[in-house]
Image (cartoon, rainbow, N blue to C red; front, side, top):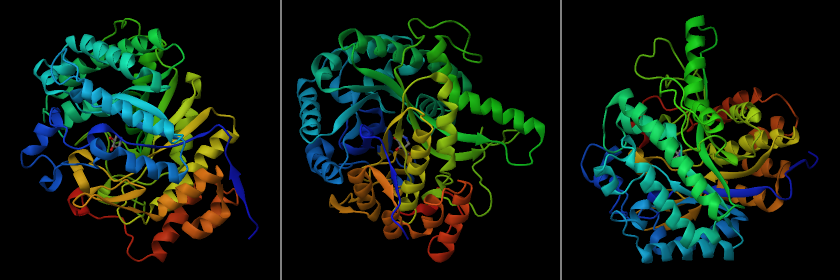
Length: 471
Ligand code: IFM
């Protein structure tokens, strides 16, 4: 077949993403560390331990990222390291972050830094963290310190990672520390303070670094009623879609809280973002009545589902969501996109089909400026620990040995050529040859994946829940 190439713009950012607690190891001042020590909270009672050993040696993986041909990486800072006691800042920890950021620049990798990614200092938890208004001032001071000491090395910032996911996991499901099921009162208490933290951080950064680009990383999923659902379910799906996907963006745009979080304005919130960071993984169906949660975990028979029933593989959703963000008129970075797939059976196709959606968006002149694959290396996946492996690079957490997955090599070819090519598909994901390079409808991806599954006997959607995912 003739060579075909879907070329990306010259200045497109090709990145990977990680978060501090998930890769650094030994984050003993964090609420997650205390939380994971007790049995029954983390799948198979696994521990983060050294995680991916970044505190000691992030450089070895940054070497790999450079070899992969990436020119950007999103990482986060661990607040509990930088400020282990209230108002006590740890110069050695800040020094280590400086080294890591410099190591990135030396390798031609532009940092995007997240200030809050799911974990908190223990002392903050004692003060009520996001359910207490004092958090806003603490977050402002922490941000100011980071700006002073590290700001010259950070061109792009994410204030808060996945705020809505965070409050849901923290207060509704109880899967995150402190395991609280305080329900909607916890969520409603936290949202205004989280928005306040975001606004405080945004202005703290911009005052000192007016050129910095500051945004949030917003997890967005396709949330829809099943085909053929009753009107009530379709209406409810619309409500859930707005709440999960757009409420936060609307608040940052207009500067106010929406029902049910109150209606008051939040100081300095209006317009407080320069870009939208989009974390896209999957599609969920939404049912009414919402028994057992806002979304239904279940997908249609035959859907391709990743390890541990993490979610359906649904590339077309990435384009749909990018398109839905156009009214906000901001640059878009795909700040996370990936799949838990220890055996790397789905990831090569996943990469190509999702990047094809990004390419399609760019070809419509939609302002997608970069893509950060989650994740560079296997890391500690929160309550699912080491059972869900998102890395382009595999890590054995016992020995810390690294090995390239085929998808890592594929991403290397993509980054280095700044394109998706028919040769890559032939080599890594031949099942896609008939769709990616024939311009056929993205709806066909589903058929491609089904054909792929049929051809590889081991690959079957997992029947049961996440306990099946193994270690
Ligand atoms: O590992 C997480 C990350 O911390 C936040 N976004 C989703 C990823 C995969 O579940």
